[in-house]
Length: 53
Image (cartoon, rainbow, N blue to C red; front, side):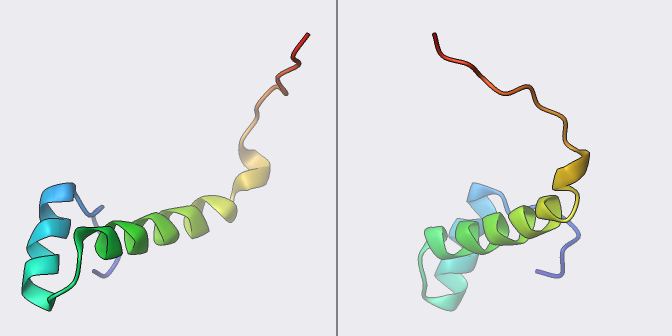
């Protein structure tokens, strides 16, 4: 929970049992953390825009 490894689905289930919550809570926390780290370097991610004909 200190940002060293990602939360797997199994770990989310284990945490939900330990804390009396749901796996979705722990997966959501991980996703929020991952998204905030990537947003910090979003300008470095090169992607060509998709053009639909």
